Length: 280
View (spheres, rainbow, N blue to C red):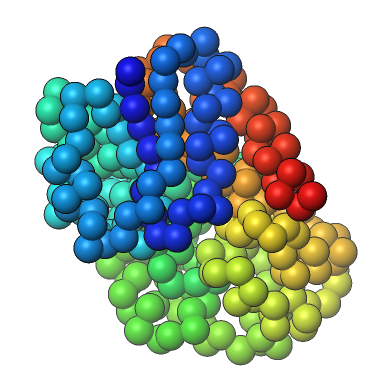
């Protein structure tokens, strides 16, 4: 029986099993299993080393996107660019790393009408912010304002921006100033943890005309997403990102001959149903 799983810590909240199983059903794949495994950085090397021939691949969430890098035999150009991998595919006995978050971010933004970013902003300084920089560069952005709570985070992401071919202009995390900055943006990626941007949301004033992707999907909507929508902007959710990036993971792990577009709606429908069930 072919196996795959999502690893992380904590992992109980993950929607990945729901999404991947929905994709397997849509593709008519029988006998495939996809689970959620609680694995932290310390346990990751041993877990990966123990994988048998039945394993097709792994999805990786925090805190493992950077911790997995030394365990890879091969890494995609996107992984080398961002310094993060959210996907490990087992291929011919080799561990091949990829970062499907980049394609997922670009697709989620485009789905809500984002074009070539002229005034792009990223909130956050972690691995997902790195993927956002690469995604915005791929969409044609020449400069991105990077808002981080720690100045050191902007410094750490400078090589990522340089590798992606985009200039990252650092800005301080001062909620009123950030809210003003967002008001003039055409694309915003909020790549911070749940609740981190609540102060920015409280300071946001209408109108806004850009597209916001908030990578959080539970609880939803976030304060920032709700404020953005009230102010007139378009919103993409963390579920949109999760679905779009997962379509690439499914095809890479299974080898199925299908388009990513064919999987989006079955996976999103399953994700929305799971979130509704959680809400009770």
